[in-house]
Length: 431
Image 1 (tube, one colour):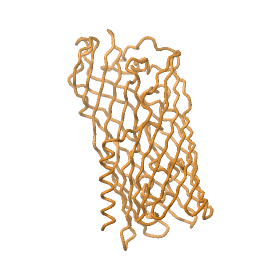
Image 2 (tube, rainbow, N blue to C red):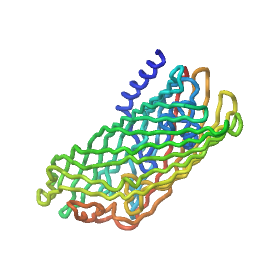
Image 3 (cartoon, one colour):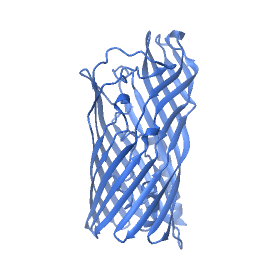
Image 4 (tube, one colour):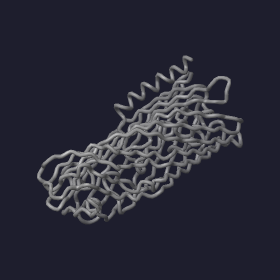
């Protein structure tokens, strides 16, 4: 009973911490794949071989594989360097550092083949901020999506060769979106904010056909974020401020399928290969309907609707990770991953400056008595993209069903450059 109480207390504490501090950033669309230091060190190739409570996220079926009961907590630090260049001018993303807490726990029910788990984590998010008067303002000034998942899970191992697991998540999210609108008689400024609560689910399967081989499959379901009571602030050409509500803003967090093969080559050496498929194509557009209509141009042409195309595509990711146990208490880890961007050239903009990327990772794990210390590092190299579209001009937006007039002074190709450093640290206690 005392162990179960410890797990509950940890979950409550980290839940409160997450409410106040989680500020996720974009990566691979706006996904944040690694949820533990070990996963980060292995390029998130942990669908079949995960052996700690972060299995709640990676594959809930693997909760049955954990040695004893464990509490895992940590912090993810993400440093982003990104910019947009056009006609010799550069606009930098000012939101460059994020700290994201995570916590997981598991508990084996005595006398049964059941294992319980719980996790508090952030698998999606974005945060970009540009100067209010920069040339990127007609595409984005501030774009922010925060979310955190609270996921209780259960796993069952009916035979030594098979485990099944599933979880249900409570999802809390908040969003901020601001930009300038270029209108016929000048410029208006728009800011939209809202929060939403919803639910999600996931399930996993773990097969062990051989003593040295594990096969894992995980499905994480779609999450529908509906911001139907958003607060709107708008300043029209004359500087007159107004407030309204926005409905119909929908942001899907896509379903993800992960399949992995883990091979224990010898007692010291382990490798895993993972394939991820993410259905980003469900992010088709952003729309908003304002009530009352925004009194743009001094009340001359009120804005009742806004439509921004996205047209994202489905993506595939390849991950490879390896672990080598140097000593009984010391592991060295490394990995590599290749990921496609879901964002087509015609809708690429500074709000989410995505590109195909290569990830190179490394890390260590150290065990001492009932404690484990894990450190993981990821270097994410985004491909430089040069595109020629009308996003920076702002004319890709439909205002009241008609294309917005393009802002002057932004011509030629747009160049997007991004690099990220991720450092994750975890402390695990076994009881």
